[in-house]
Length: 595
Image (cartoon, rainbow, N blue to C red; front, side, top):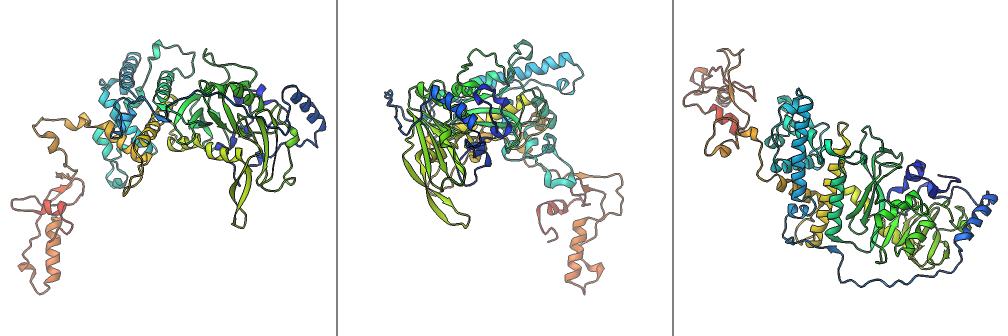
């Protein structure tokens, strides 16, 4: 916790990691962290309190009177939900909705730039293994490649890409033969290596995100074009897991994902639809579109960059204590944007008169002060928790359920701002949970990591639009989940694509049908084979007959012990192949092949 520093005078990355942890959604419940307690008490620091009090009087005058603001909001007939969908309706497929964001231009750009990157690599290094084997990439192959990569994130998770093409006979349990149908191992790794969205040699590299910036900007434009947000929004940060050598990589020790790329997201509270986002790249940023208002500090500028465009439209932004400050809330209120969230007590201009020790209030009690429509509330749960809001009457209360240590459920009084915060703060967390990268492979390069995260953001937003068009819960059927949506998207992206390696050799009219059920059981004659090997089928039939008819002489057994030099290349069992014999087909098609 920061003791005496003013948070607004610092950059985001200069905050202590315990302040950055921000409770990851910061929902108020019985498991509040110790960081929600005030770091210092006014009684222990009289000089500091007086100094801060003098500062507060110059800008905010807190009292017991709350004065709400009545804004003249524009009338709109548009309901929250999808818009400008063209021919998309409730019968549209997952790929049709996904194509609202990943348009044909995106697929064509990936195809052209990946082919260009392979050509540039071959020119720079003629001995590069993957560049020497490169063949031109098609749009259909790019779609199939992304489908396979998406399946590796959700369906089949292996530690390394090479593991998906595992073919050792003794490890048949670990084989995933479906991947070999669409890509060979070297072809997949070559595409993954050369995958690009921009031309490396003709790009201004001042921007740290120059490799993925055009893709991110295009997707954000699509996210905002095809959806109307509800009035309650959630603003929080997420972490894209990675451990690459990267200048703007972050370490957050209290997060579930401790190492990675930090992103600030603005999502709809109800659904988790991501509407706007910003990737954190460090202190300096030369983008002219960035706002640098010293009044609200570096963190406040992040908030306003995300919510810019929502002025005087009736939106309420919920955020946690990492962002909340009286100055920021006053700034947003003047712009016509309401805000609500938890706050730490050492923020500049925070009213120190409502800071309380743990034993000074009983559970469910609250106190508040207000300066116009800006209210500060202290609510006692298991420890004091502090809130600020510009849209909730601090005197208005409701009831929430809490569990005692004995396990009994009780009703506790709380301010209305607390209940609204708990209900609406989880939008970013919901998106982060659903559209997450399940595994951080160390041989990822960070631009590809961001590309995959963009793919998942697009897929989740497409799923939200699908749920708006058609209720995911249908009578007599299982609810349609995001994982099921991804399964359909994967199959539709692949379509009829099949690896060219499967069509080698002499062509035939019905070659694809002929190769569908080949299997891996082929006859072979190993070098160590002798004339003394007995057919396993004939031997088993002879043995079963002898057990059932012990009185029959061995010479009268109707099943002969046939010798053979051929065996199955996969089963490693010797089986006779002769005229009139069914031993080979019996062994490979019958469970009890001796009958």
